[in-house]
Amino acid sequence: MNATVTQDMSIFTLIGSASLPVQLVMGMLLITSFLSWWFIFRKMFTIREETKKSDEFENIFWKGADLNELYLSVANARHAAGGMERIFESGFREFIKHDRQSGTGVAAIMDGTRRAMKATYQREMDRLESHLSFLATVGSVSPYVGLFGTVWGIMNSFRSLSNVTQATIAHVAPGIAEALIATAMGLFAAIPAVIAYNRYATDIDRLATRFESFMEELSNVLQRQATG
Image (cartoon, helix red, strand yellow):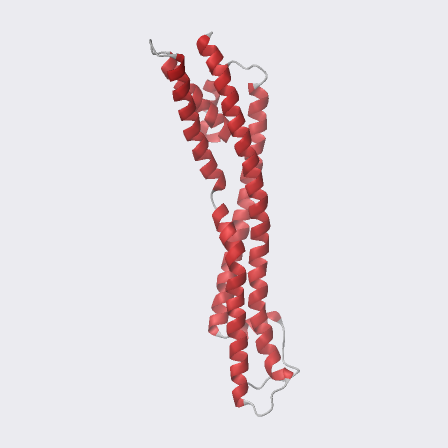
């Protein structure tokens, strides 16, 4: 390797001159980073929108809105409804169905209502938690993938010294530098993914708590209505 101290050491030149395995590692990390940022922004808007819709629905619900009118309103705009609204719709639909059947006891009515809300709650949580596992995987695996590229690049750099009679820092510097870029790219992909995962997992846990509390409160309201 005929490296000199005046050799171009720009990042793009180092990436272009890296060995094929290292370039493949860098390319994979770059694609992973782009996908990670896409899911980060998408999840940010999803959670923000879900929180906003939950706030708006709770304000309407606890202002004493007529449950039948509220149910019709949510059912007619279900495609734009939030998770809490869908939980309310499924629970109230089941409640009405059982309540209209003669001879159905309150316990059976409320059991069916809770099951319907729980099933919708689980679907909403699956929707909110989608792609979180991808961020967790990126955050945990990317540094090791980058390290693999670095080890491979350094190994090739030292192997090339076998053809050099007198080794100097100028001979190994470019190879080591291009190898270390792989580690840097691994960290660049991992750090935002880890931060986003921890933040979004906390936000989703808060929404889950709100949903569960609402289901309990709605169950109490419907049970009073069924026994009234």
